[in-house]
Image (cartoon, rainbow, N blue to C red; front, side):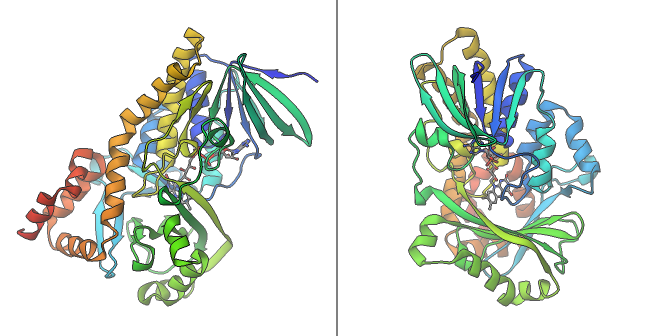
Length: 414
Ligand SMILES: Cc1cc2nc3c(=O)[nH]c(=O)nc-3n(C[C@H](O)[C@H](O)[C@H](O)COP(=O)(O)OP(=O)(O)OC[C@H]3O[C@@H](n4cnc5c(N)ncnc54)[C@H](O)[C@@H]3O)c2cc1C
């Protein structure tokens, strides 16, 4: 039986793996990309595609975001977020002060079943050997390279490469086997996702809704508007909380939708579409080894989900692009040793760490319901504070003010 060979293999064709593939192809570097699924395939997610996703898409081709903006059958244009404080008060924060100045929406909401397939279609098969329906069962690093065992149509096969990119998402085999990752409930969240049709009283401008209910802090329940009068509804909660309080996330979500004073009304004619599904969120609250002897990790495989917002698609794509740029250098040097690959890890954290660290702090701040209620009450009455929040979406230094006592002092005295 012949062995598949390539300098680089990517394991996983989610947003992280596909972005790595796209930018490797741009650099003219052949590679293999494996996925155990056949596309299109589902991925449990809130389906919110943030400004960071759009910024990587713009680097691939600026026409993509415009096409998404115009494709109202598959994507909702997202112009803002509604925060609902534990006391039930809502605060609307637009992503932009003046919509008219923008060519397209800053973010989108689109089902991953469609979005991932849309990305999958951008893989350049002149450079990428695409192996879908192929589950990788083992990876072993030797002095000569990386040996990959995979299953295709029930047959055991092998592939050899010089360096492997772990892009298998949460519980990625490469992360567990080569980087020794283990789940840490303090930095890991459990999430549930359901699709509903016909929810009442949706936001008139399609803002995404984040409901910070006391029971799920520092997590939240979300309602994200989708095309065709559908919405992605879900809940995310730190795993350490689920364990500690013996919480059944599914009952918690359904009971909330049926009993909460305002949600109950909104869901009374809503229809649940399909099953409620769960999946894990490996949070980027602490730094980890994202690279080593002959391997690199991108996206959820490297635990890069924002601990405050739960967004991970953008960071998967940012890290995928950085992995491809780093690999272009490594291929030239023919050096895949731990010291050489670690430069990739440094680049990822140089780009993302300040934001991840700040989000970890904010995650702890929202654990104080009284503080959250107080900030929302103040901001509801003050245009300048709401404008400040708008600027915080794009400006990390502005967002950092949220952890400074001076910010709350100024808020207190208007
Ligand atoms: C409930 C929930 C809600 C979320 N909401 C949002 C949101 O609204 N916005 C946002 O930005 N992020 C959200 N996230 C996070 C987001 O889903 C992930 O961060 C993102 O999917 C990471 O992309 P990835 O490419 O790293 O991994 P994935 O998207 O998980 O892709 C991994 C791929 O690897 C393949 N694979 C795995 N193992 C193997 C193997 N052994 N062999 C071959 N193939 C393999 C899988 O089939 C899959 O296609 C949410 C997550 C959850 C769980």
